[in-house]
Image 1 (cartoon, rainbow over the protein chains, first blue to last red):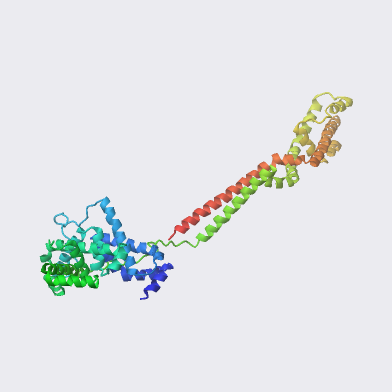
Image 2: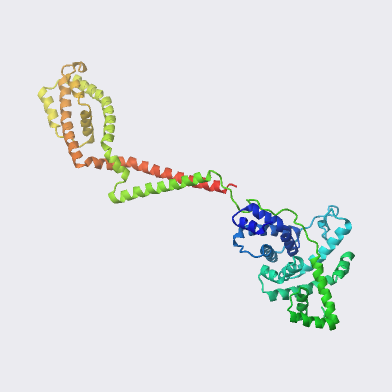
Length: 203
Length: 280
């Protein structure tokens, strides 16, 4: 894929070229939004808003990492939504149990029905633990740890995305990891055995 | 949190696993890691956090987020849009030109330009109006003749001197407009008087003929005077003054109508252009 050529065409108003870029980066952008927001629906909205904003402002893109540029847009969209929620807190909607007419308290309704029960359990438990701990972080810390540890960016790229000095990135990342360690300590034993073994071998 | 591990140690360990330390910082930290068990355990915990986050399941986008022209804010205008836009612009320009032209002409000469044009065609318009009046005159003239015949039949025949003297008293042209109209009617149809006087069939009794002759003669004198006045008025341009008060009144309606029509076209075409522009 000629990314530079697609960007140039998109800057001239070629929507098809831009949509090819969307198809390449939509998983990455959606994951960033999902980790920031913690909800699939909000993540979809933030992702769509981010791509619309990216298309409207693509003429302001002056080169560099297109991935970083997109991640900055979606991170800002998540910041805006989180600030709006802070001003007007709402009760999250969960599906009603048709038998007991009560809301599900866990996220098991989000499980992909195609997965085996074990796989679904592992994914759900890991997702729940990580997402719970991530949501406990302040948004600024959360954004940095997602960019570096989940998206795999280096400090310089992360600093460019959140427009923060490199020293601040280092500090925020260290404090975020410390908080995550404390948060995950309680659920560490609940994580799937296979996952724990693979971690130990990596370490 | 480990009590012996300072925030600076945590920051150094965090940067260490990301390979973000300088060579000196790295060597100093590795020396401490060789001797400090707690620091080494903390490093292992931090690595586990990093690996856990790095191995977190990636979610695929639940749908494609490609943009449609509507979502991207691209508005597809109708093919009629350029036509309406051009019509609106042209009608607006014409409206402004007509309006300003009329205003400027009214300021400089006191009479709108179309009114001046109307002055040039005033004689033709006057002839048209006179022809209409003559038509009414032809309708009224037999009635006058019949009434005169009735008077002659009921009253005793007057001496010719008295009959001739009566018109002489009314020789000065009356200021009323009716006489003028009659004079103009006579001017427009000069053959009507001889036929009235010479035709014996129109007079049932011999005494009526002198009466009618006297009446027509009396009427011819103001007609001649009116003709002279009209000629003088034409020379002095007084007919222009008449056009100023009559014909411009008609033409002002034409101007207003034209301006209103252009304004309606301009606004209508502009609204249509806006509607067709918003079509997607």
